[in-house]
Image 1 (tube, rainbow over the protein chains, first blue to last red):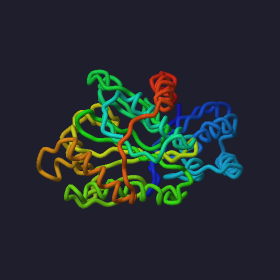
Image 2: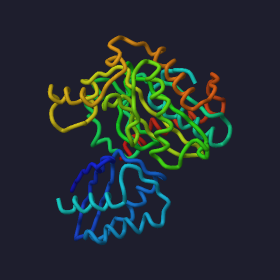
Image 3: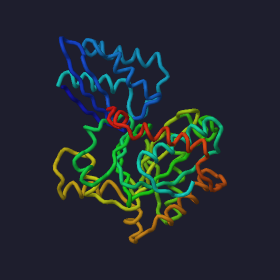
Image 4: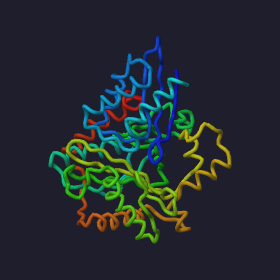
Length: 92
Length: 248
């Protein structure tokens, strides 16, 4: 299991746990003390990222694409922060 | 709603019940004061039990474990050390900004006014804290659901650093004096600032005055409606369930 945690400057603490198999995300869990509404969007995002290739460009595009279709309000973090921690965990 | 003591599951169920009732227009805007028995660690919605809680210590102290519907950080809701409060308004209340930080600022103002009543000068610290001289004295969380905005938070009256460090995984390092010092440097309490013992009724009265002033409202004492009581029973089951608590 790969892990990474990151305190967003001026924001909240984000954590990720993930498993990679054959270059793809097999398991992913995002946690932390940020705020997100609707809160179900986080679980939906996790599902979207399963089977995603682990290169940064793909992860970033899945995440930004996901939030473009939503009216999610995130406080204490941004979509780019989620992409960053996933990428850092992959490299860990 | 006047200061009442309940367990963690009931406390969270009551907040959600009032939010639903308020959103549906079946209850007025509500200010609620409450305490916890037994003490409980309350996780933010997106936090994981594994990362935040020392389960062995939790069991040793006999504390409950619970998860909020709101985001934010883990809190030790201490039986003897704090008062919690919630403010429940309609989501489209013209006073409540859709901007989260502005909305926190507005609804934390009652805490700042309450501390002023006690002779303590406090400030709002974005995103969701109230601080005195840079030290945190109150943490807050909001959620918009059912057409209502629920703002709940805690005001530290006293602080047992060993309990807090025992149950919250603030750091992986072993508890030592240096860490206790660090915690004491980051957090403060009403008792410490006043340099005297203070009872819950006095803090509760200050909170009532503070919120009356900050929100510019009249307050009338009431209790849960039968509809809310019914919802509390229903929601409490969820809050007390393993599936809910260990969902992350």
